[in-house]
Length: 569
Image (cartoon, rainbow, N blue to C red; front, side, top):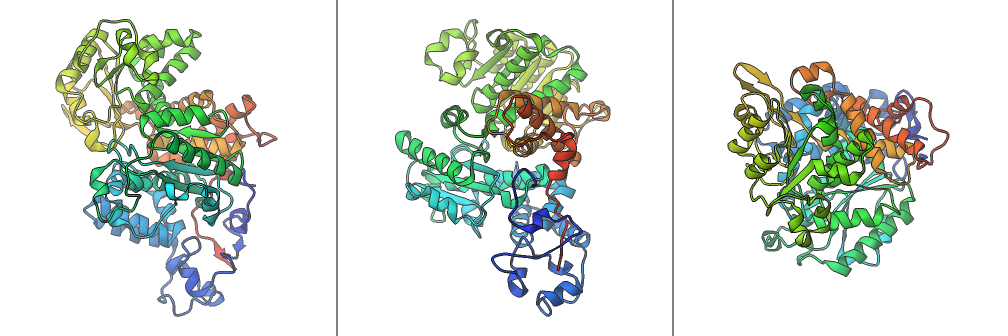
């Protein structure tokens, strides 16, 4: 047992020292072994292995260690000027030599995370049709209606633990990219392995293609998806229902389905519909909320006071905005024992029509209604800041350059240390840059963003902006669910994940103004998050893997996939 699923192949049961046999359908050897990304080691095959597996002459005579291969590849990657070229080089590596890909990613996480994930993955999705080489993941389109279970059986792996699925309608802040959204599940799952330690073979990326409303794609001769406008309503719901039923039938009760980059209306409906019956998690609503709450809990050490002493103003009332707001309200309710209706009143949201207030209640979408408080109507963000006087400003609008100089200055005039989170991705959609936040607040702001920014020098002081990146939460969160055999996700698990992440921020991070720990230690952070999430699953009676391990952090670490090469007999 490992990661909570019984293994069929000995490779996952073997420790790094044990000899294993490179099975595919039969024992892989010779040319096929070099073409199999899971077993290929390139020049790291030993003299003995080259003899035993018919590799003589198929490789140049030199022998290389994995470390030397890693050094060579990092050198090559750094030669590329264009981030998209780095992305393509990484994807090629993943298809050629899986272990080396993960070794590279784990050992150089701060440098390579922006390449395999936001912001570069956004550009990759926009150009997915023209950079498309070999299909990754599973494509389920309207053509497969009625046959989804058969399609799942076409996937070579049987023991799937986590599925990341998108319908490509709202990719980051870039909008409808249809079938090209596949870059997102592929990228997310490579982080599940690198940062959370799930086995690559246990991860399944899925894109559900119901068409696209993006005219540019519909007219693009290289577009890889269905050439039709998006199916909606009953047709859409039936396809999703068939997919969710097939997943449970094929992979069992404990497979985690992570919804990714669905449009607002579908995201909330799907989460609400399937939460009672499946192990589901929406990273845009719940993952974002958990990572932001962790940042706020950590930031209290810098700004002082309790969470209940603060007032929150959001720009953007979609999935991320309302998801974060709801989790803050839940945490406040847990801390102060006040009812949720009360704690929500500390949180105000601004959408495209202005401040969300009770006089607008009739015309609001259902997920915005809980945030309509009593106040006269206010049009823009600047007026809302002046009227509400928030201590925390959070941007989740998907619209860049919306935290203007006037807005940041207003925040700085109200607060000694204004907390400003510009969460929209990719970098081009960020509400403001790190430099703007520090400069306009005269170096007083505590700032974090969704996409990475370089350190900023202001008045000969260096400020290091934090990154409120979901990659802090979802890998550890998923590992916690899987290793405890959880059958449902509960909000208390999200709160536990937030508290676990906030507890990982050390004094030396605070001294630089950081409210998140460095990514270089991410596997340890993920293990701690997994342990707290699993503990909550056991406490709530939602865990099916019994008996409960004594030391959950150690157990989490022991479950993690190691990308170190194995020796073949």
